[in-house]
Structure formats: C-alpha cells, structure tokens
Length: 277
Ligand code: HEC
Image 1 (cartoon, rainbow, N blue to C red):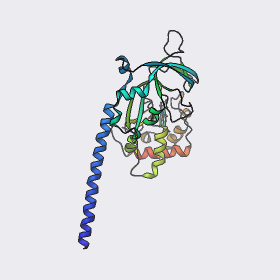
Image 2 (tube, helix red, strand yellow):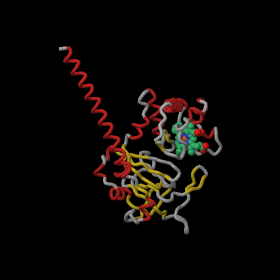
Image 3 (tube, protein in one colour):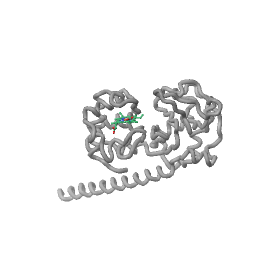
Image 4 (tube, rainbow, N blue to C red):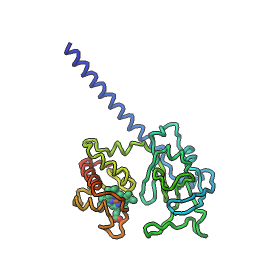
C-alpha cells in the first residue's frame, strides 16, 4: 500500500515537472513570434506612404508644449490594426513599447492605448514658417518633437498611465510580463520592492541585462554599477543626480533615501545574475 502511494506521488511529480517545462518552451516561442512580427519602423512606413489617412487634431492642453496645439496626424490605433494581425495576440496581456531617438523607451498596456484614440503626429501645424516643429524648451535645453509624436485628443495631460513620446521612431508589441519574467528577483523575493521601483522609475531610460531603455547607461552588464560605485554614493546619486554631476541628464525623480537603498539592494542581487540578452 505504502509503495503504491510513493509511486503515485513520484509519478505526479515527474508529470508536473514535464508539463511545466513544456509550458515554458511554448512561452519562449510565442514571445519571439510576437517580437519579430510587430515592430513598426515609422520612418520606413512613411517613406512607403503606408501611415494612413492624415487629419488635423487639436490638443486642448499639450503636456509637452504646455498649451493648446494643432498637429497633422494619422490614427495610431488604425495604423497598428492595419500593420499587425491582432487576432494572433492577446491584447489584454500585451504592452506597446515606444522607441525614441535618444533611447528613451516608455511603454503602456496595449488595450489602454488602443482604446484612447491615439494619434501619431508627423507635423506641427503651429510651427513657425520654414520649420516643421515648434521648439520645446525642457530643463533649459531646446529640442523639437520630430519625426513623430504620440498625442491624444481626449486624455487628460496629468493622467500618467498615458505616454506622450516625442522623437518617436519605432513602436512594437511585447508580452505584458516580459521584463517581469526576466528581471524579477526569483531567488530573493524580499527584493521585490526594489525591483518594482526599478520597473516603474528607471527602466524607461536604463537597461539591466539589455532589457530597458538606452537613454542612460546599462546598469548591470558587463559591469554592474554596484561594482564600480561605492554603495553610499550610489544611494545618494539616485536620490539627487545633480548633486554629483553638473548639467546631469538624469532627472531628480523624487526617490527617497530608503527607496534608493532598496533599488541598490536589488541592483546588487542582479550583479550576481548577469546575462547578455
Ligand atoms: C529620463 C531618463 C532617466 C531616468 C528615468 C533614470 N535615469 Fe539614471 N541616468 C540617466 C542618464 C542620461 C544618465 C547619465 C547621467 C549623466 O548625465 O551623466 C544616468 C545615470 C545613472 C547612473 C550612473 C551610471 C554610471 O555608470 O555612472 C545610475 C547609477 C543611475 N542613472 C541610476 C538610475 C536609477 C536607479 C533610476 C531609477 C530610480 C534612474 N537612474 C532613472 C537617465 C535616467
């Protein structure tokens, strides 16, 4: 009797192990399919005249220009639906990632984006004669929004769930939990708060193991910042970068010292989990 029971448990164990592994393989496969088929190179589409029908949109209070604006634009949701076969993906578990010229890489849930009636602006109607875009002044620096800028006519500018990327060049879809799976501190769940802070506040500009934005430097590979910064200085830097570097390009994000320590603890853990992706 006892022998049978042990056999049964052993069988169940082996079975669940096998089926778990199978699931994992399937997941990796769909991830790569999603990525290769869903990257939209916007300049390329524009050159081929494939952006769609253009229209003029009016933005009541543009969060980048801080005033009312008019743009020539095409429907971004229509463009995505024309270029990508959405029946092949699960929109509820997919996010859209925006790639900007300077490496800034914000993202948001695909469903939220598609339902917000987003527009891809390609020309600034208010631009001074002879120019295509009005100048944006940010932290004393002058720039403009070309070649593309995502805008919405019916989203409040203070609703931070919506991203308004400018200098946009590419958009692609990715499983919602991709970065979660790759960067989650599986071997030490106490570090989850540092991981969550990193995901919400840093990943748009910094990568770990190649996952994330490239506006700021990669923080883990091949050398982790925790290996060449003194720990205390690193914690202080993340709280207030301008106290270390003149004209620093990293903004002060309102991170507390305690939160910064949690991020650094997470970065130390990741330094033992380096991987070239
Ligand atoms: C808007 C983009 C942006 C965000 C968001 C951002 N950073 Fe940065 N970060 C930068 C840039 C750009 C630099 C290069 C700094 C410079 O101008 O010298 C940098 C530099 C750094 C450095 C120094 C790297 C080195 O090798 O010297 C660290 C560490 C760092 N950031 C950590 C963080 C952490 C942690 C967060 C999240 C709490 C964060 N950053 C959020 C843009 C950003």
